[in-house]
Image (cartoon, rainbow, N blue to C red; front, side, top):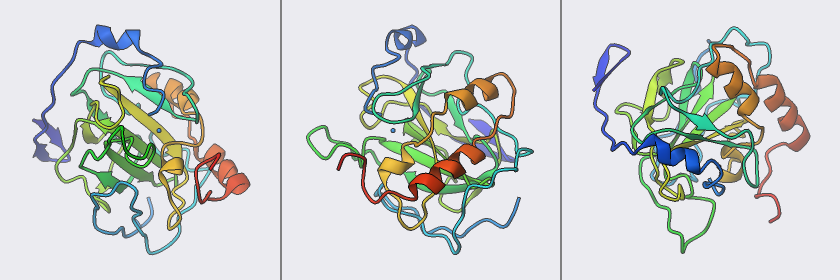
Length: 237
């Protein structure tokens, strides 16, 4: 049980030895204060798009927003790069808390693991997952969760450090406990898993947040969005 915004939230999750995680930093290569927008009801389909009442774009200059490391654990490790596209796999024991990086609103939520290695590769790779649309307009996405915390639904307001769920190995996590973490623009109304999984390298920001810094990705995400828009299909397809 954890205390969260004055409520007691039940969470469960089996923990695996951390030592095994250090042997696999590259294993999961396939893994990807204004008014809040109004989101659609949660969907069991992680490819579904929550639709707001107005477009939200990354907003540089909101540097005073707090940013925290997305996994609250004594032992966590990550690699600065990722196979195939920008993203980061954060290795920690299954069951360790996954938290909101900054203040914002819950976006997409997938509480059902629909991944099948015989099926399409991409749409369901994340297994259980949740994204936060930060008040800076940046989307912060985490996947492979064991559980998503009670009350975490599209449209719910969260604060930096609030628990969203627990580290797990759902989806195509290859039986390795870790959080896939991606940073992207929301691309609302045109979204796809190929954007949600991450479009800029998170490592420089993770390095800062882990040391108690507050480096903000909004400017880099906004620049990427200006160059690329919202691609209608994955790269190379």
